[in-house]
Amino acid sequence: MLYQITRPSRCCSVRSNGELVRRAARPASAACGRLRIAAAAVLLACSVASAASLYQDGAGARAMSMGGAGTAVAADPLSALFDNPAALSDLKDWTAQAGVNGALVQGSFHNRVNRDADLDEVGAIGEFAAVIPLGPVRLGLGINPDIAARVRWHYEDAPGGADGATSYGFRRNESSILLLRSAVGASWQVLPSLSVGATVGLLYNRNELHTPYVFQSQRVLRTAKTLLDLDTDGLGWNAQGALRWRPIPALSLNVVYTSSSRVGTDGRATGNAGVQLANLGLGAAQRDFAYDAQVTNEFPQQVSAGVAWEGIPKWTLSAQFDWINWSDAFDTLPVRLTHGSNADLNGLVGSARLNDDTPLRWRDQYVERIGLERTLGEHWSVRAGYAYGNNPVPAGTLTPLTAAIMEHLITAGVGFRMGRFQVDGAYQFYVPASGRVRRSELAAGEYSNSVTEVTIQSLNLSVAVKF
Picture 1 (cartoon, rainbow, N blue to C red):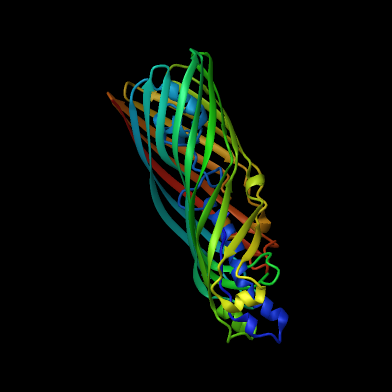
Picture 2: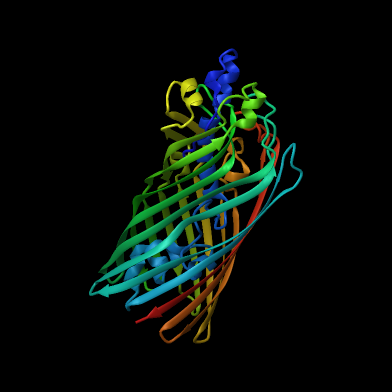
């Protein structure tokens, strides 16, 4: 999804050792491939992650506290607009809602040169939605972070690269991905028991990667290692369609489809391959490089089906099932670099352009959610929930930067309503998860025999006001 660029050194100028020179030049392309992986990884395990890998579990504190079952229990502007637009029809008044999500991500990484590398990351981001009633139609608009992930590790770079012994020492390994969705939607109550809704979303995607990178598929540069800094952003769009049917007043059946989307991002990729070049006997070659980077991120289509039951006074029970089509979106990450600044590298590959493809091979994900709410008197309610989603990241392509490996989510929350105001709070705990790599499929095999462990805790507070 992210394309990276790195700048090899003056490999062209050293011609006597063709294979070594080729490998020395690989850093630029390798950076790209890894960049993309990093982007995916960022989505996966960062300051705001989820049982559904990269996407947050529910919009608004109420849905988040009920296992993320927003399709089933959408009843406020945030969850209606972003989880189930058909539920906009249930909101009869002009209403605005704002929230803030905060998360603490902790982890550890072990391999042949790192015994206990630690991760401690804290982040926060806001969300907003408003609903406007117009006769039988309800309009909604807002902005929400579908994905907001950042991971900043510090660990020793394992020896590897084109010569098998290149290391850039102890340094930061950082990746981040942000996917903001600004949505406009509408819902129509076709029958007293049936509502349909849809939204169109403008997507803003930003990707950053700072790490030693190994080229994956570029013919000349494959396995070469370089330091890489990548930063790209761009716009795209997607759409949602939803249906809510109440066969009886106490029961609602809900289905939501979210389209796949492709977001083209542009930016710069820079790097330094000095250590790799020196180890190949090419220390006189130009070390720094820079490219224009074009990264196309594909985000998966999703289908959610949920049911909510209010047949017992003061209780709401919900269940939801999600399918996320990662296998079609995160199979490989193509990297496209242009206008390379390193004359030696350009001469070596015969062009100022580089293409690299990084394997991801994610699997489709299936998430089951359950939620429970109990009202206490006139103003208060308490909630709890649980979600399980299979780990979509195969061990062969796992790195600490792509550790979207969370499976079990436990949630709890509280709500307070008085007059025109409603305040909701949610706590989400992602049970610690670990991923073990015995033999890495990534070039150079530097992540073979490694273990990555991650746990996440998040808090959400949202306030809604009727006008």
